[in-house]
Image (cartoon, rainbow over all chains, first blue to last red; front, top):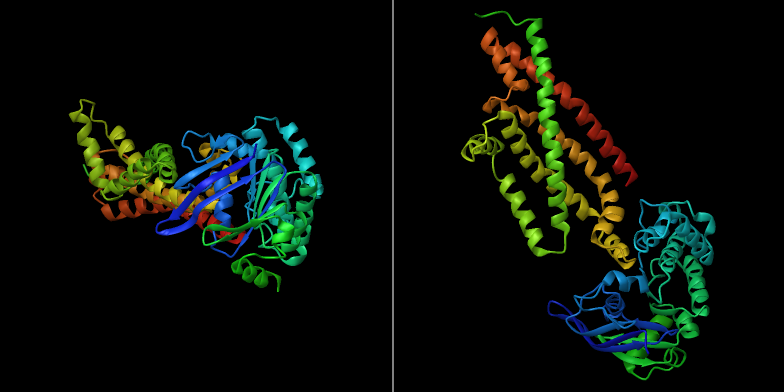
Length: 243
Length: 216
């Protein structure tokens, strides 16, 4: 069974249709790469998956739970689905450790010691164990983003969503974040990424979605699709990002 | 019998300060509790709660404090409660403070970027947990300078309670004037005593504002 099942969703902001009858499924272990120009609806699609954006029509089912249903306990769902944002969104008033332990202690009811152990563990995975007691403003952008990834990992999600997580970073810092993503990809984590990093997308993506005008314009194995476009829209897009 | 304004009058005026401060404290305490609820209603996800909070603030901010004071003073006797200036004054000032504090704190809560709510929500925190652990701790920093600024207004405005016979600093001044017939001396003294209460707070508010401004 697929981990995520999106059927015929439509999302509008006033008169603007951002997602137009979109259907996608994501199986456990897949790495889905979502590409497209800005305004094509790719970030919105990602944000719909954990209920950050309401949709007007269609259904979104994550691990058997319908997301866009008022009865759904989003709190439960969000423990299964982690998201990392372009702008990091760390809690600036809390230490790195507390950024990570907050949700495990408050939401999952862990003790402070248990949670700190997990914090140490996830920070090790992103190579920042020594920053346990630092504050976000003392870290570089790349380090902040790695902490944000660690914070999501601490909730042991089944699915991780990444919304252009390297777009706010300069190339040098992008590298260190991509390395973390690669490690996660190798460990078998199910991931959906909105990204402009075509190199990463080709090597690690199991499937690619090209969004255009709120629709999934082209879909296929990432390694093929990102080399040979079938539609002229994708060809133009690839031409623009690769050169 | 008319007597000269002397040391004993000064002592009485200084002693009356405690009533001014007590009334301020009562109003601030009552106003904080209700104000916090109003501020949280304003940022809640329920349109009805937001609308109620907006109207609450509009109605109270659109009414003169002196009139609120009279409404309470004469209103309590209609509902059969004893007409006690102390009760009428602390109720009216609490109401007044709740609307203004509610508005100040709403602004502080809304100044925290939407993305902080999203980050908290995505980790599974509920509305109250997001407020408690993520939003309020950051909003407190922003809200301290205007809150202290409002406290100064509150101290000064408690002088209106003199009109319903509550013996705080200003009322004590009126009584002293009646006995000494030296209004100028008395009210300059009263003004100076208010200044002594407010000045340290204003300075503190400025220091806080500067500190938070630098810290970003």
